Image (tube, rainbow over all chains, first blue to last red; front, side, top):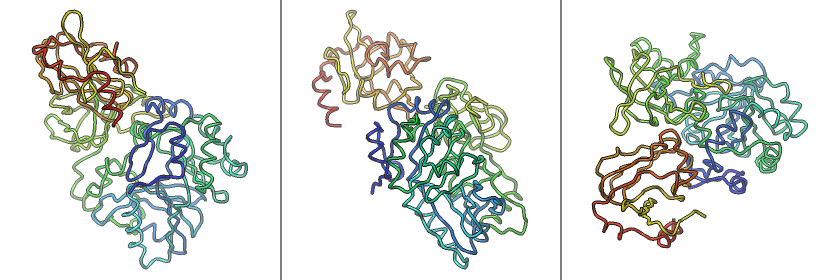
Length: 360
Length: 129
């Protein structure tokens, strides 16, 4: 079963190298993953993210439902359009998915979840909504384009319909605004400023062309991965799964423990984990010797124990190899990674490598 | 359309071999291979002086996305390795047949050259991919 977004023909037209991603035919690059990465850090690039899942939740019980469903608290969202990054946990405290939820109004929230997890997420959300006054509507009619980079917003504004421009020119970071059927969030998965634009899928191909005319370059999934890793952003299925809690995935900060009375799915399990003492942590690695870090490489911490890399790659901005790794809690500031039988030295850092386009 | 110089020999796994005047051979990966791999960021080569056998994965080339084994087309002693690739692995992308050479080998069994493909046969192989 292979799906195509409404922008598939555009990807082919623009020279995209098409590969399978979670059952979707997507462009991994348009010639050079490295060039596309630098384009986003220095100028403006665009990604087709229409394969991701947009879900509208409506009804009088939406807020109460989401306060139960999500580990972060939607009550924090008091202004129209404000966005929240949260994990959705199972009863064991494992991560089912990570997502962004926008507060549109008292009876309407919009969630964006991953493409690869669509089926299980929808089934879970449906199941958990029993007893709540809420309607759940997936929006497969919406395409989504992420425009990212220091010049992304100004170039996107050149391409956006006039009425949408008004809605977004004053948009704050981590807020969204809707205008007719269009919805624009000042959010992203690259560490750069920019927009994630949802629009009716029939209008997406023409909008892609207008963005290209405004000087925004198409970028593929390859660059998306190196950008998000540099920016310290987790990838579901790689950095966290249903068998890892947020506490050992660098996502403890996304859990809203207060108010204490808020019972959310997974709370008890997380509390037990905290009470027992959390034994692992997710850290950043910068390889000191020559080589490339990948996922599932053994990490050796002298006098402490062993761990494993989760995501790894070459950082085009740092020109070094970087990774996230899950290691014992007491791990200090260096370790070794086993690559093809050799032990290479790595420095341990906070899992954020690039901020505002520059090495941290 | 990828480049396939007619004077070289090739393998199904996208390596090329050039016979040099001194009797040794130079080995690298083809234009088709570097295109498939994308931007190369790391190359691991055997040590000069080491022995290799045909079909050993004696080199590894890594692009941002993945690591790829390079299979030896011939057996013999590694007499030289391309040190410039340590700091500039992307040379292979820019010049797979010249500046992007990987290793030079003194053959222990010259007959192995007869098992390799010529340019036309290699062309047919990649046309089928």
